[in-house]
Length: 453
Image 1 (cartoon, rainbow, N blue to C red):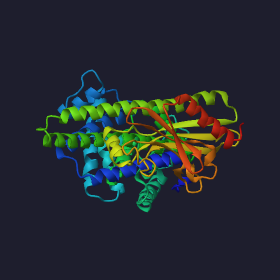
Image 2 (cartoon, rainbow, N blue to C red):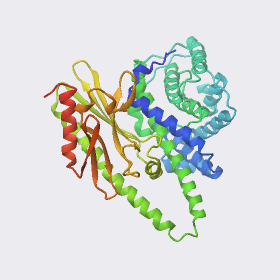
Image 3 (cartoon, rainbow, N blue to C red):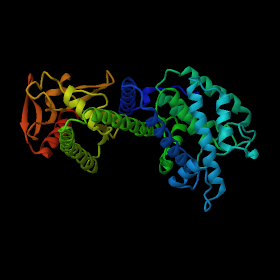
Image 4 (cartoon, rainbow, N blue to C red):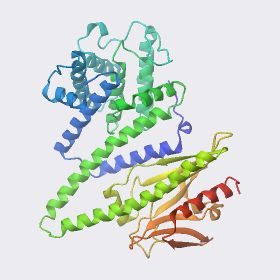
């Protein structure tokens, strides 16, 4: 079985997973969801998982038809009976997933066999729950699955690997185990659907939301699995992480809605409550529009530079959208979990090496901003390859060459830029021309870090 080498996973993806870990921990500490809200979420995720997982394998039921089959048990008359049966079988298997997760036990081979048996139902030619005794070919893949006699050995190795990597980051463990199961292809049919349920069982057992790989992502998903065949696990890990983050956002949304409802109920007698809330949301929308202008300006320069550079290449990565609730935390405390905004990476095309990585995140140093205590600075950070983490740019010896330090929106809704004026002093410029500031940043990086004068 494969050894996990985090050195082969990009810092951006590791940071993305770390942010999710922190958000999930923070979510747990905030207390459990309302029971009815949790049941609605799980029903929503179940419908979407079955629609997408079956669709990846060619099922033609629409999302609405899938919901009808699940809720009403109806057969869709103008679609093949096979499609309806697949959805009903996946429903039973999905429910079994939560039964398994409630026991909090490690996955065993019997669980996997039972999941497969529920997925294929009573279709005897598919030998429900039994490992294949024939050779198979994975359509569209160059990978050749192991011979039938090797399947039990490989499956035992997979279970042993899961036990050995029990403390590994769940996203990485689930993604790699998913790929390894697909590669073993232990059953005659139903391997993809089984693999995606096992992926989610690993996530659920670790207290994570499930991952719904969408049917429209099928090409990228299959490509990611093929990349993993060659030892490049980043694409499949990224797909799992991105979809997990997307569904976790629903938990956040439901929790926040529940919290807002509770708060509203407490303040129902306060006449000014609604007007204050609307004002705060209006301020948030205006603030975020200004932040988006900054992001778009940096992103546009990346695109334009890449069209004209030959020796270097830039990549732009954007993190999760900041919610209204996170905005309130930032305004009050100056810091909140998961508030990275975007990063820019500089590559040398000649040797395919990463030269520099810069990241912007929301953070307020109260020592710097004591005159403006409620602003939310967009601080510039630099990736330190020695520490393998981001740090404030002014902690590096060459930092005086890169003048930009932060952006923020002041109480008058002006854009303010903080820059390194002297070695011990940061100056501010109110309402500068944004494109000039961004251009100067790129010019300084190219001149002082890449030697292009």
